[in-house]
Image (cartoon, rainbow, N blue to C red; front, side):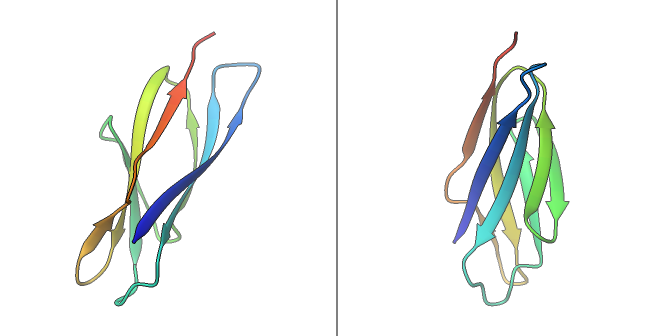
Length: 88
């Protein structure tokens, strides 16, 4: 099972949103060797640790999910995260 969690910090001086993404996988056999964070804009980022810090500056909604890579099969996060950035 793979879960994506977030923690956000808003910059009051601008419309940027800093987001900590953490992709957590339950004990996997074989173990997870890489994680992929993707959004609905076809942007993605790989991480061995399953952690990312991203600055979100575009207005609107973005939907994020995580994919955990194993040697046997790849598992996608159980739920997506929807973030909304409002303009000034």
